[in-house]
Image (cartoon, rainbow, N blue to C red):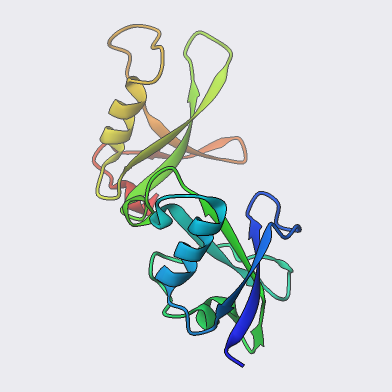
Length: 173
C-alpha cells in the first residue's frame, strides 16, 4: 500500500504528464528529487524544484515546495483531505537552496529618451537594498547620460503607487 505511481508534469505544460515513476510514499524529499533528476538526466538534484497539485483547481499550487520543506512523498501529494498523484517539476539554473536565499525582482526599465521598456530580472540576496537593485540595473542598461539617477517605483493601475527609498530592504517588496 505504500507504493504510489506519481505523474510528473513540467510547470510549463501543467496539463500533460511528462513521465511517471512508481515510488514509495515514504520516500524523502531528497529521494524524490534524485529520482526526477536521474530520470531527466540532470546531474544536480538540487536544481529540481517541485510544486504540489491543487485537487480543486486541477492546477499547480501557487507556491512551490521549499527545499526539504516536506518530509515524505505522501506530504507532497496531500491536499487537505485528498491525495493527488501529480507533482510538477522545473529545472532551475542554480540549486534551490541558493535560490531560496535570493530575491528575484522583475524590473521594467523605462529609458529617459527612448520609447522602449525592457524587463530585467534582478536576483540578489534577500537582505539587499533598493540601492543595490539600482546599482545592479545600472550595469545592465544603457543610461541617457553617465550620471543619470534611477528610482525604483511600484506602479499600480498605471499610477505611481510607491517610490522606494534606496535603503529599503528588498525582501519585503
